[in-house]
Image 1: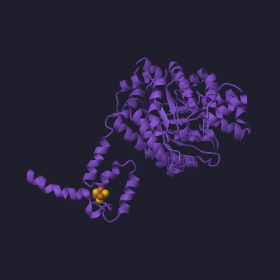
Image 2: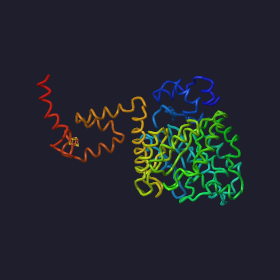
Image 3: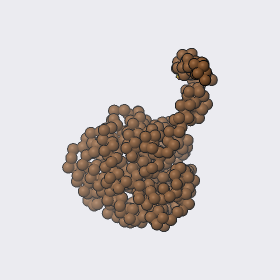
Image 4: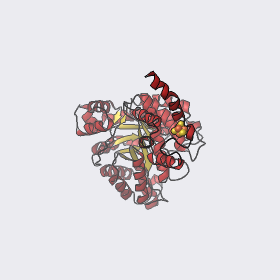
Length: 434
Ligand code: SF4
């Protein structure tokens, strides 16, 4: 029985109970959300960890951090360091996007050290192995090889997989019928388009979708339906190609649910701020409320080096409008493989976006920490402020760098500290009234 089938039959299991405890909701609420498809619990049978989390309606907005080796940076040690940094910064999930080194070894090592859900994009491994090890073109990949990779990753314990099932011939036709500034920027999507063009065949994930679902269900892998045609620049946002793929994703969502597989939908991409809410509404409507996993979205194209900020602005707007899961963007986006500092900055930026949205989404208790912070600020309680910070290390370092006003006000206003001045001005009067 899969998690979804248990939910549909109203069978309470330890997974719902453990997840509910972490989410601060009742197990029944979670079970009903999974049955409706509006909540997903990414948890492979073979990945054992305690911090079972869920994404979806009525829950806090979650953050994912991408790590992974590349052809030029193949060491697993560096990726394990990034994993530690992402965990410390508070990420809720991690995706291993490795394409360099022994990919089975890298993934298994990351999985062994990952106490939260781990996702992958299996086509990356298939492509890296055929191109680097076998010295062949992407088009030479056999369908069996592609599915064997998925099977292997599922058996190893991957909790959720991004699979680009919606880029079929029909979507490609729609895409070719319009002018795009940037074509396709999804790595997985571009691989599949090359495969389809080379072989003159339908996308194997679309054509053999039932076989894919059977593998995912067997190992309890949540399907993250990839958006191959996501806009790679503002000018390409919300065009016919993107919407055509979304319509296919809606159909594929229902088929996955019918097969007992949990689903998350991936979304854009680059997008002007005024289109974000409409995109969330469309996705939720077309995909029947399935949890939405947004990649950013980045609200301007002109800030390389600062795309954790452009992504966090878009993420906050998206989450407030109903997106459930934010894929972080790092300052290294578009420029290089992120290092540890980039990973931390990316996670923190997305956590800020998620938290800011949760306050407006009515997530129970979302504002408690803000109120506690305000009380500490008013009391000039620096330890309390640092402890409540999303990045306590940075807050502590800045406080210490401030130097001279330790233990009292800070070096911003010094003896003119507004909090102190106000208290001094009003406290005696209050005492008189009392
Ligand atoms: S000195 Fe200024 S910035 Fe610092 S705590 Fe007081 S009011 Fe705030």
